[in-house]
Length: 394
Image (cartoon, rainbow, N blue to C red; front, top):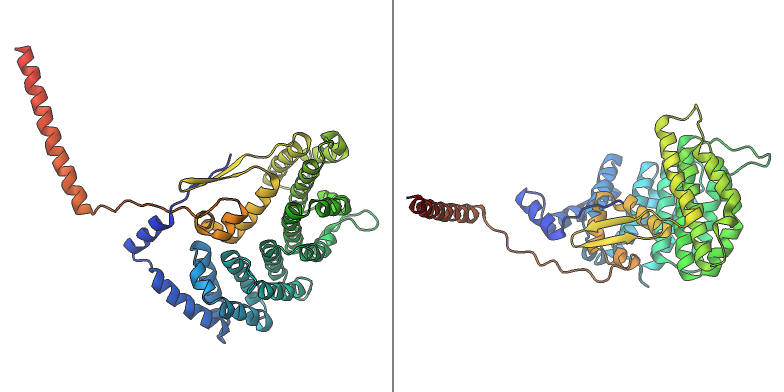
């Protein structure tokens, strides 16, 4: 069982005020300045500005600030993608996904996000673009498409992601490709994005999801033989989700229908490649032990995410993939966004944002005085008790 603690937004704000960290107004002023600096001539200035904005929006839920400037902000992102080169593109892609997860879907912004996604799709397949930048583009493409959730367009984006990660599938002669670590990470990220969108398709049009599974199951199973652990594990988790969806749509399906697949996974669990370290092998066995249990017995690791007075229970592999996608996006700020972010609360069925009724903070001077009075009272009571005991003894 995995759980995490959350400190309420109000408590965090109190801490920031006491420790001299910027208050909301100062943060907004810095964000405005940072957005203006995204067009600076200095690459260092641009990257610092991108990172400041990303870090701030990941740690704090600033929907009003972004929404009131949504057209200006999204236009700045579009210009950054068109004009930027190198690392700027990756930073811009990361920021687009955070902005999308902050303000969500709306008739006014959906066309802009779709246009931004189209621009990123061009970069994704451009082999002259650095692999780590393409990886960030893939992650943003999947998240934005998942949040906007337009039927039909989901499948189109899935096709584009598949076109990238299928390069890790078996060649015509049956041998497995061995790309560089960076390209393997790109393929793994594209597969995870593809799987995230599969969970969205399953929620809206289950028949389409089943058709996609039937079409792609064999190719994704080939990825279990990848020499790269990230690709191998991502493929296993995708297969667990596929089997979960199949069983949810057809009660007659049993684990016996996946005998060959289960045998393959057992084989992976007992691998002992000399070229792979002990840590990687332990991780591989642990992950595929869970995957095998999911396929054979329908088991799901019981993950409970605690934040404030609330908790999120992840009761399926699909939910787990969705949660992990937003964890990658928000990092340490995920619990704050679960508590405050309306987009995430709708996705995970958490209901309306809870109102935190924080008690007034007691000043240290008042607290010290109360402790002193309590000590005196306690001393008097002890004296009386000793006097009574003395009388009894006499």
